[in-house]
Amino acid sequence: MAAIQAHYSDDKSTIALYVDGVLKTIGPQPEVLNSAIQMLGIKQIFDDDFMLGQGTYTGAAKTLDEIRAFKAQSNAAEATRLREEAQVLMRRADELEGKNL
Image 1 (tube, rainbow, N blue to C red):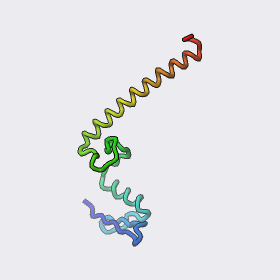
Image 2 (tube, helix red, strand yellow):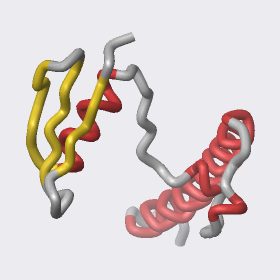
Image 3 (tube, helix red, strand yellow):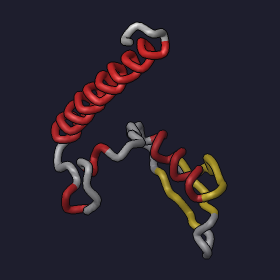
Image 4 (cartoon, rainbow, N blue to C red):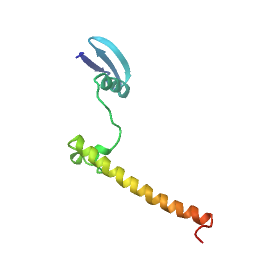
């Protein structure tokens, strides 16, 4: 594996990323850290599912299976909600067309 070093400016606003002793990229902290994460092959998931619907660190999912189960449950609940909303909208559309007078 490549030797990776991140050098921070004193105010930590800028990072220089060196790979095997050679400057790879330099710039604002978030962008450079994102480059490092990608170079390491880390898959990034941007959603709150790992928090399992709550807001404390201790309540976060301990396994990926917990996240998958939470996501499946959330998706099922959202699908039910959308189906119910669709039924209401279909009734309203029928009323507007005079089908349910």
